[in-house]
Image (tube, rainbow, N blue to C red; front, side, top):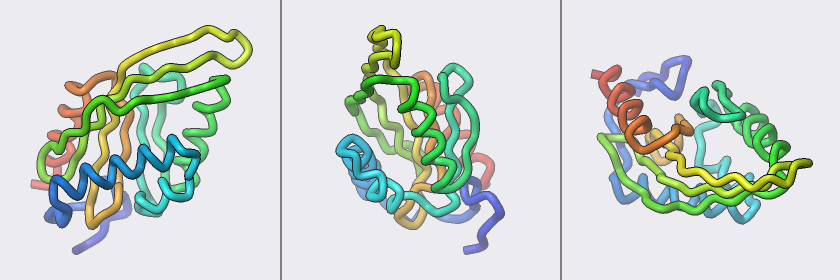
Amino acid sequence: MARSADPGHQAGPASTSASERIELVRRGFAAYESGDIEGALELMHPDVLVHASREFLNSGTFHGHEGFLRWIGQWNEAWESFEQEVVDLEAVGERHVIASVHQTARGAGSGVVVEQDAAYLWDVREGRAVYVGLHVDREQAARVAFEREAQDH
């Protein structure tokens, strides 16, 4: 399979089943929630593309494992505590999984508690995430999944 400079937009067939994709995302969230960041990184391609929609405090695009670490570092600095519960995992299209989550956080310094629902989109190829996106809801994540897959056809 030919590799592009951006692993988040590699062309080619999916080689990971829907159940395998869902299990990979489940393991990724479990690793992150338990503090096993190395375990989460092992599930991501070294050149993973991470994107958070502009509606979030840590919005932007981040590249590779280093970018992922910078992204979560910015997020964790903003909160005294942060928890997220995976509400649903759904395989979408040929390569994607949408993880609907409920997040609860307490602001660092302010102590203000914030709760919100959000949706992560993972693009899984050859058993690793090449894209992880944070979106405001499942519908936005699904639109992005279908746009990403349409680019490959």
